[in-house]
Length: 400
Length: 187
Picture 1 (spheres, each protein chain N blue to C red):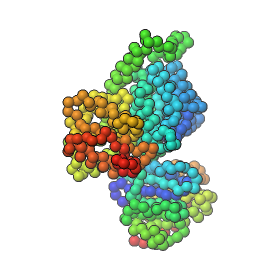
Picture 2: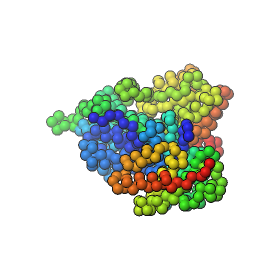
Picture 3: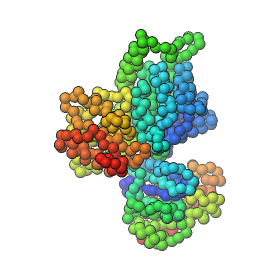
Picture 4: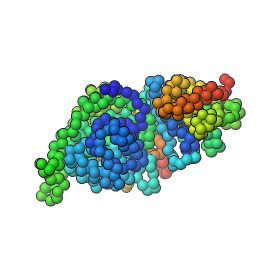
């Protein structure tokens, strides 16, 4: 039995190592930067006999997810990984996987979309896939990638959930950054994650039909059930995170609060930008400024009630998106946070800050400028702009 | 050095710049430090100037931006000095470690840096012991001798776990020789 070890792993390696310990039956994937390391490591594990899984090198991401759908429908624990154009190519199958209620786990190393061709980080890929019925979990660092890859299988396969999960980490910033990761022993992972028990697997002895025509007389009921299940999964996800925390001495939540005691304005972050933003919050606090931070881990389902609770009492909130929803109010997270707060009697001003597009480096100084803007908004009690792009040369943008 | 230490590596594609950054992080991890090692990925191609970064700290490292005000700059390829401003943002009380046959004092004057300078002819060590100009392991020997960021033993132990057999042996020898042959500016 292996004891817990601190290993030097980058985000991709942390995902691959966690997947190995979760013992998937089937892995079907197509390599794409910056996810490639995950697929390389997993194929090594299989070739070296360290992981007893069927490894399918698919000819495209569309085929990779299709293979996962077939395997998962048979009752197999199923995993894939992708990024950017690869996720875009999977698009139609994403809806099939969630509508079939298949507990597929997919790592996404978040990367910008073409054009211009860009291999670097932003969240245009997964944010663009937010309405396809998958659970979406966003991670700040390699340790979180490791811990939440393991939890994602538990969440997906829980009979109260039965939904596919995207477990996301920022391309390069996390995928290619080496850090110390405290890994669990194989037996600890085994005790947390028992083998999958499928509900209605494809079985010639007990035939079932999935994926047939859903005529208007039935389609809405099926979609309604899907919506109810997705909303209800928030409670199950919280329970599973709590169990993980108690079992392994971690301290995770679906919304992480940082320096929120006495905060009047706050940054709402997602993914790896949270770490840099926390350092900025510390600098502002050292100057006596009432600044805090909330890190959203779960974007789908959106924990609306938790967000309302966490943001109530604040004067201004700056939402850091890592993409733009063209022609609206910045990024999707900004729009959804604003929508969630709209019916609150006392609500903070909410301004969007799409930042770090296509791998543009986001520094502590950017977050200092954003928090200074939030303090001005709070003081004047007026919001003049819905959003402002951060890390860009252009009129009205914040800093290159 | 106390608190968080930031190291920036400069070199060219194919020289093992990213590996040098990672080996340093792994050596510090062995000593119980918190670490972060990552490359600045441009369009990857052999021979192009490349940067990699390492952060070492006693406490959790949260910042994930690139490194703009390094405590230590390590230059694996002396010709990069003509292509890039390697001392940009380097702290006055920091270190500049360069693979070159030249003297530290001469380089210090030329680059106009207040940082302390150490040099080593890592290319000749690598050619002799490794049979190829892979200077990433020997330069670490000079780095630890001058900055004492981690111990020589930790570097050797990481080199041994990264490489196998004769390759590991040769790399350890290269690290040790660059440790011995480091020319460190008198302070």
